[in-house]
Length: 385
Image (cartoon, rainbow, N blue to C red; front, top):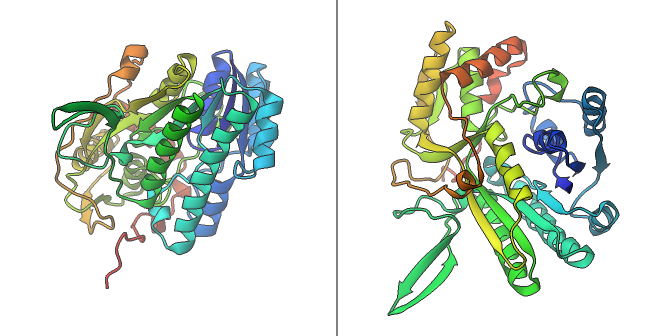
């Protein structure tokens, strides 16, 4: 297949490009380096700085003989995106090209405005480019389990059957996001659903839980191909943050009581979920929604596992419960369905001490780069006033 990956420089985007290239697909990536720019502006650099996209593609070709096309540009710019889709002629588009951070989206008016305009503008342009160039192109978009919030009923995979006053119908599952970032993801889903109904497009929306991990099969042989690895409050996911804090001898920063339950997924499984979704596309006129995670546990349970893995490496890992900067339920019911990707063939890689120890060993090799200043949260969902 010919697959266009938008946001191909990111934590998920570049590993996806390599994974699908290794699987034999013809890959083109595009990015405007927004995440790199924001990290520099906020002074929250990743633990190591990956090469730029052109350099990554050259390294990949030298190692494998496979070419990944690279285009630098903004998906919000209609001319750039339309020309790219027209000229490359993809069978599928994987849409990662969004501002990916919930804390960033809550950091003030400028950050909120950027998140809103970037995320919705990018999704809108992707939809229109598909409609005008080739409506048969399958759109695969990365959503988030955060769209659902923490309802007091089971979370289904995107849809729910309702009986009301003796009549039945099927609706998108009610969603109640806890940040502006997650709210833009809800709006993405609504945009897709509207245009799928209106124009008969086909789309898969992957409601992904927090991702953790460093290594994939494609980057183990050359450290230059490793993904971004952020550990700050803005771009660092919780398990990745805990791993770096453990290595640095800094107490794991559990927000509030730590009873928040979420569905988590290994980076390796994210790549496989995306591949399965692309290679088994939705039908014309279908918005298919998968819940993309492999196991669920509380933040406290994640911290306990990091403590155990650290002890196995001789690290003295402690836990510190800090004031929760977010507005979220810290003790709640959480039971989410996630069978569709398993039925397509996903074989999960679950979190355990071996996985965490391998991550810690890599972080230990980069320990001199750790900036402890980045560990404590500074962005609050509500002001103190």
